[in-house]
Length: 495
Image (cartoon, rainbow, N blue to C red; front, side):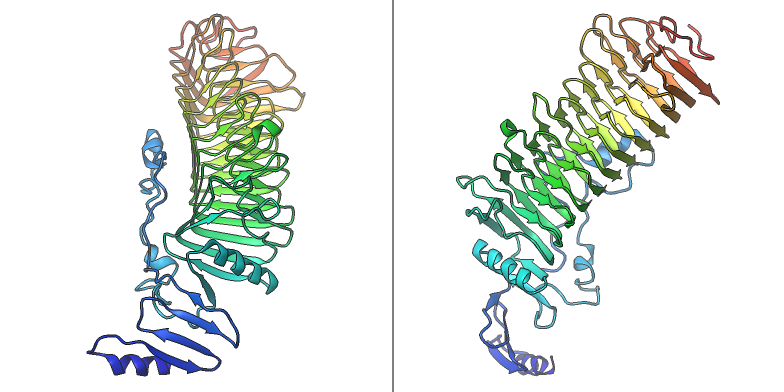
């Protein structure tokens, strides 16, 4: 670096001129708009895109719903994110003006990263090289679109088999519109892929394959941060899952958007016997197979969703989420989703659900559970289930549908509100809650059930099984009745 400072001081006060400084087996060109780094004898030249510190804040705004607006219905949900506009973040983790690190657009000779010019062939070559050399870091050209045209064994890019990080710098990776069907990325066993500030679009897994944009194999690992995954899909005629992400390994999705993806089960994300965490992200406008698709999010493993928005998604069961595993949702909003059968927001069908400090609002199902359809043990704490609806005749449970099958199974709802849900169809019942006759239990603790409506009684809580109430349970102002008309009484409920 001392040689670089000497050259720069020599040209102060005059126009920049190109100067080439050779030292210790590498050369750096200074003073032009393109910085070229040559490492070692015979190495290929890599052109840097002259990136700018910080970049543009926020994500692809197409079709998104701001979490700040949607979560305004419940206090404590607005954390000042303002629709995920994260701003400059100080030049991306310490690389900004005050970050104490290197600035984007400065000298790159010691940062250990490879800068990929705006050429899809250069990106393919860089990934091949990193796979052969124990992995590494790539920086893409700012705002470039890398359009992929070649099918590499089902993928648009080489399979990831090493630890590789890609900083997208606002770039987009897309499948060409006239190309064969292929996904964009696959993370193989031993692969560890980190993507940041990048858009993935138009990936489409071929018949018999899954994961329209990304597939994570067993023993693979993926981390997305500030990534937009939009308009990817699978061949639903072949019953392929996961329009956006198919996870069979370990995945973390943070500060990201899945928008307008389509697939059989898991229009946005399918987590199959695997582990995934979704944090501070938006799952919006995704469509599962309209004949028999399950959920924008499909889970048969372990899924945790926190501080996120799941809205305006469509499927047959579980408009927002279909759960066949262990599902935990905290401090999130599940709103305006649609299910053609059960569970407008969530259909928890074959595994436990933990729902805490969240809003389930304005979802619609045809048959059972306009908000929640629960046929496995569930714990609902500190949440609001409001303004959900059922559309079919003889539908049940506009707010919550409960059917616990085993003797030790139970659903517990505590410190929550079930308000303004409606089941207006002919002979529909249980505007607030419908509890099926079974061997399990429904337990209500400090719960308010109010202003719900159904065509047949009871409009508040239609209980046909075993139900216990604890603390202060208020069931009031429901139409046509609060609890009368169900097959079994509700303790401390009148009218």
